[in-house]
Length: 490
Ligand SMILES: [Zn+2]
Image 1: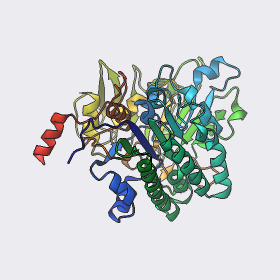
Image 2: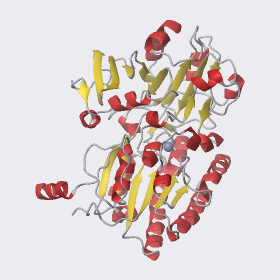
Image 3: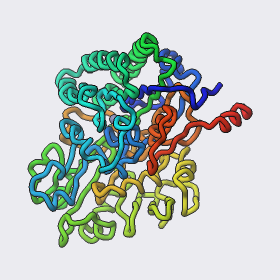
Image 4: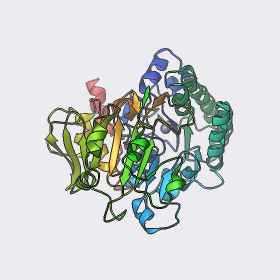
């Protein structure tokens, strides 16, 4: 039943179905509405993976092309503020960022130095519509340069079809080429979900359009004679759930008398901001606060936030839109508060540590205070907050992470003004509905707990490349021994 893990894959086709919900994909599968996908993965994997926090576009693409979490890669969200650069440089493109729009062209530059991407590792490679693609050459990366203008066109016309048509041409060309890695980000589900609802007809049609596109791709691979040697993986950066109420984070911060930087009016606070409120998804957000004495010189700890803005954390928590308020713990890691309680998640001695201070904010069953990354995933996998210990701790590896990080309550988001269209659906939080994603492949990934950061090293392994050391993800290739155990157990 199991494909030979070391089967001779010599190229990989990765499809990132941006914003694809596990439950909707399951329903379509059961209804026989995804016939091409079903056939391609028949002897492989139809499973779940856990994405990263914040579960937002681009930041959650990073694990698929680097094997790293957003905190490690220093891309801690779709929008961020860099306090060190803001303090030290009068003019710089790196003071703050919004990847939605032209800012996405700076994502490759923003990746932490020394990070190697799929496109640098597996050559030649082709990128179609991903904003994170360092190493994909100019010649093979045409779609990258048109992705922002075409998304702007979509917002004027409301029609994604011309973008998919262009993708067909790029895909045909890539499949006929010698490319060993083809990375295709299909963004229609996410865009339609935000505007029309994630269970609305336009979004559902976008899932079906992916299947039709897969039919074309399979034919093209067969014509090119490379179908059997092509590793196929489909996954997503985040889920999506309906939103009916909008909390105005920007207004909340401004109401405290702080000159606040936020999009789309960031230029107004290019100098002399007291605070920054950068929400995305829109179920997650970073709030940054200037220290009264030390300015923007260092990130604030939980104690400094409380001293500088007394009552701010409890005021945020008192709002029903906000489920978690997360701050930087003294001594490192995250302090996580919810109405249920308070805990600290941090790293040390090659392990994660989770210390409940005042009843568990996630409602987890009691667990050991010291956990391996594997154990922390396994123990939280089946809860409403999968991998929340590791995901909150990893975010504070990045100096660009907020002094306060928000994760919203399901049904609410954190931005009430400034969107071109009211958001009918959203993502970004620690909730399973946002962070659990489909993982489908013609190869056999092991059943059970797995992260999207594991996909990259696993793909490398299946292509016969040695995954780099020090990734957040690990290769999940099933060894011949494990495979025989599973076959025996079955
Ligand atoms: Zn997305």
